[in-house]
Amino acid sequence: MGGHLNAYTSREQTTYYAKVMDKDVPQALDILSDILQNSTFDEQRIIRERDVILREMEEVEGQTEEVVFDHLHATAFQYTPLGRTILGPAENIKIIGREHLQNYISTHYTAPRMVVAAAGAVKHEDIVEQVKKLFTKLSTDPTTASDLVSKEPAIFTGSEIRMLDDDIPLAQFAIAFEGASWTDPDSVALMVMQSMLGSWNKSAGGGKHMGSELVQRVGINEIAESMMAFNTNYKDTGLFGVYAIAKPDCLDDLSYAIMYELTKLCYRVSEADVIRARNQVFLSYGIELSTSPEGSLKSSLLLHIDGTSPVAEDIGRQVLTYGRRIPYAELFARIDSVDASTVKRVANRFIFDRDLAITAVGPIQGMPDYNWFRRRTYWLRY
Image (cartoon, rainbow, N blue to C red; front, side, top):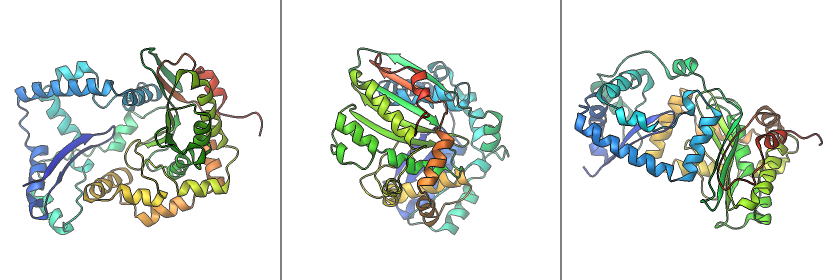
């Protein structure tokens, strides 16, 4: 066929997708339905796949950024499902068997929790008819994702994890507040605030000429190798904060700069800054911790969904998270409605005098303690 078949799992969703020529769409749907409904789960293949997952886990552990964000979730949402990693502990992987997989599929791969989305050279009516014919063996268990979340909600806990390792040349850390869920009215304002804080790394240059005052501080004083604001949404909560990489002797100054600019959003926000942010560089929309090319916020959104695969993925994610497709006109209108007063109100809700979660890895002796950060979530002066 010359097609492309793949799958991935995020913290909230699992996606199976095929990219094929228009004439092969029925066959691609047949393959996807076969994968989901008729898998044989041969024991030898399961054993082989366990080793593949364990190797993947080793690779992930070698990527410090992944480790930082895994530990950030573990400490921020401790004792809740959102605090667990996607792969899970090695002990679980080593004992996964056929019964585990069949039980998981019958519990979670249910018709009410599944979306089939298609984009490109397809006709909606044809896809609907084919799905009706092919996807006939799915469980009809009425349990929804909301039911599961209400049983085990993600509860944010102000806390920290620090892993001192002097063998690593640079320190990496993330500072995060509890953010907004996908459907929270303030989720778009947090996207704009993320854009206001911005992102930067040394290879990009131009730090002192960037619009973000945090990036200017970092670039002019050379107190970081790279930094980026992030805003991650989940079903019932989120994470909003800053991730940075720096030399050990810069951690004190960098921590001060980050906390000053974060807390400043509660007190001093100029309209010009918000307008710039609405048309700025960085956006994490739909994909965790992604960066977009230079351009306006709106064109970043459009660039992100350039192509049939991202469009289909976007449709599926929106139907699962919002229960409907969000028109771009509506999304752009919500972005344009964010002004300085909105940013201050939202910052006071999520940042002002709030607990935070911190994760740090590397030579981090010079990083201030948790109480230092907590104290700087508010000012005693204006």
